[in-house]
Image (cartoon, rainbow, N blue to C red):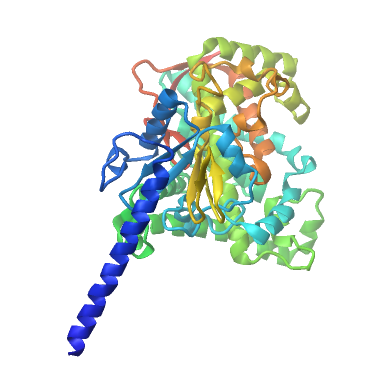
Length: 498
């Protein structure tokens, strides 16, 4: 009798869950029917059978906006998991202007996939915690702090250029995405943590760079596979086990640097009297209005976030900038003339030169429009929101496809034409400021955007002063969006001495 009762109870529970799912499915179907849904919807798999990675999804959304001009699309990751994507400034700015958080706890939330790695740092945190930490970290990006970094950019770039010199001397092509990643990691370690680990000299595959690359790839793989969304299934899977291996390494890497600095400061507190504190000094010593500092876990989350965002996104921008230099030789020569004119016989760019590199800056902006370093970001709706005339309910993730905004025909009619001059009078053209958001927008815009732009200017300026770069005939140059915009087969170039 007891067994029968339990059995009936279990069946009833299953039936209730099933009926709730059917009801929810019908509700979602009515909602997605009001939006521009992607083509080839399957009643069970949704659009999942068309999507192996983010590049497939971006292609589907891009194709749809090119034919329909829509400002928002919807798709299904299997029959129970609808996805909404805004791809136009009119819809994106509603989210940018809001205080809606990142989707870090929802089952299909993209930032949930990054949470074990980056922790609840500035990228992912929200609410009072985000406001407090943003306020505490802002001094690390003051111009007085950024100014001496230009010399570090120059020092790091010189090591990078020596690698290009070897390729030039040998007459062999060189894959530069991996080399640029090492250089930007070197820059981040030196500037933010005063750590000189000689990462560029140690070889082409520093384990930290490799770990970050795999963590990004594995995070996207999990995002695209709903079966890996539940934590217990993910950690038991081969993908989850590999993720844990790389995750443990990057945490140990950061912990060692933090522990070493704490011991050093305990031994000699007078170190904090130096004129310029680095990012880690500020993290360790920061106190809020209540006199409370950051916990060890908070500090590690910020270091992990800063190392990732500061080196990987910038590496993407610089690598695609070098690709564009090679693809558009006339642009390369314009930048060469500007850089040599600004230098006026000097060997290295200085802080004062940054604002004078006007065409180089326009070139870099166009690179980041054409090849968005961060292809997409997301928000979690805590209340209903009207997007493109459709009320999206609360507790839903909405993706903001920056890459699709950068290629929307309403915004950029000639979006596939590489034309830096479009930014010459950009601010005076009465353009919506949300048409171009390479560093996000609103209150949660990138805190390190000036740092990144200056690093890009120095590396590109130093490169064109010394070398000409050309594409390698027969090599396939293909975007591969993950957490950042990578190159599927790398970016190979030939290097010629000037």
